[in-house]
Each structure stands twice: as structure tokens, then as C-alpha cells.
Image (cartoon, rainbow, N blue to C red; front, top):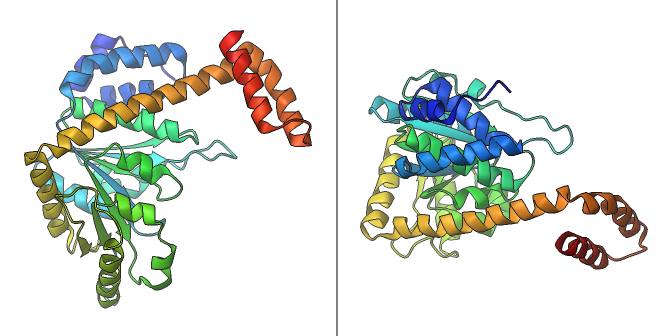
Length: 328
């Protein structure tokens, strides 16, 4: 990592929306070095009053649903309207190799080269806490740089949807045409998070199939509680590749913001999200401190071996580790 510029220099660069400064600020946030974390928090403290005005949208869907193509099409529609769009792609780091996919800039070539857009894949280091900290803080930097819309893409697997849904104003779930067996495999929890379901790839031969799938999803939504008493999640069809239905979809997203914003619910939602973020960060810091504790690090391999061999229980091992951590 190249030397970090002084905080006042970074601050000025971010406020003026300088892309190089924006990239350096986010790289600083993503660093795990203790001295960088301290600098990052100093920077975020200065940027916090400038953040919070963007429209935060989470977008999820199973691999192959066409998220990147959809996001690029939506992003171009918004930048053509003069809006500034940031795309934060939650990029899972392989738990085996440690390598990240980091392919979104390659897939979103048009949007990446748009002067009104900023595309940033963020490695999560295989931890949901990584998603929470890096993506939330990167979002604040982008807002301070003047981006009107922040799109957060999830990988669409595991628990990342829940994490991302808890940091945005609107959560869009993209589905493939042809409900059938796929509908049976949808986690009820995902439907409960959705502020909208959009059946993507609804063009050509898929148009009728997508319309039928949309009706199935509408029926499924009746079995779940909406995210707000003021909003019934709509089910739409669209085609990210051709742009069909994407403008209409965005109109509904803005309608959601207007309705919940006028009622004060969006502000309340963000306040609650901030408190949950605080507790999430506390959990992360405590676990991090536990793992780095010198006595715990010495004791841990032995206890893991004993648990693996059935010589002690997991509960006893945890109790011993916590006793050392809290009292040593």
C-alpha cells in the first residue's frame, strides 16, 4: 500500500470528488493495519457531517440473475439524468485461497468509464463484519463526495443479503424468469427483506415466462410481512440487457422514498441501522481483541485440539478462553 496522504489532503480530495483521493480514502478504510484504522476513523469523523443525503439501494439476486448488467443499465439511466452514482460491489474473498473476485469493474465497463459514476468492489475478507464495516464506511465516503445514489450489490448467497439490507433505504431482489422449482428454493427471509421483487431477463421468449413468475412471486409475498406498513412490495418485470422496465422500476423506488420519507420512517430506519451498526462493530472488535490476546493465542491451538479429539467440550473451551481474556 502506498504512503497514506495526510488526512486534511484526503479530506479536501474527497470533498472535491477527486477520484484518486476517493480511491485512496477507501483503500485506507479497507486496510486492517491498526494505524490505518485510526487514520480512517479520523477521516470518517470529518466526513460524517457531509454524508447521509444519498439514496441507498441494496440489490441482490442469485448468481446468473444479471445483477451487474442490470446495475450498469440502471446506473447509466441515472447518470444520463445528471445524477452521480456510486456502485459498491460486496466482493467475497475466498475462504480457501484468500483471493477476491473483483470482477465488477470488468463487467461494468461503460459505467466504470462514466465521469458521473464510481464503481468500487470491496473485498470482505470472508467475514460478514467485513461487509458491514468496509461497505458502510465506503458508503459514507461516497456520500461525502457528493454521490446522489449508492447502489450496493451483494453476491446473493449466505447471509450477506441480511447485512446489506440493514444498511440501505431500499432492498431490491432480482429473480430469474420461471418460478416453478426456483420458487420452492427461495428463502422466506429474503422475501421478508424485499422492498421490491423484479423478475429480470424478461425479454424475447422469456417475457411470458417472466410475467407468470411475477404472479407467483406476488402470491408468495402475501405470506410475508412487508418491511413497512406504508409499503406493499411490488413485483415487476424488467430486462437489464435491453433496459425494458428499468425506468418504471426506478420510479417505484423513488415513490418508496417519498412515501416513507414524508412519514419520517426512512430517518427512523437509518437511526436504527446506526445503532445496530454500533453493536456489530463492537462484536467485531471484541472478537478481534480476543484472537489477538497473547495468552489466548497460545492456548487456542491446544483447546482446538482437545475439542477436535473429544477430550473437552466446546462450551468448556469457550469458558476457559473467555476467563483468560477477561481476567489475564
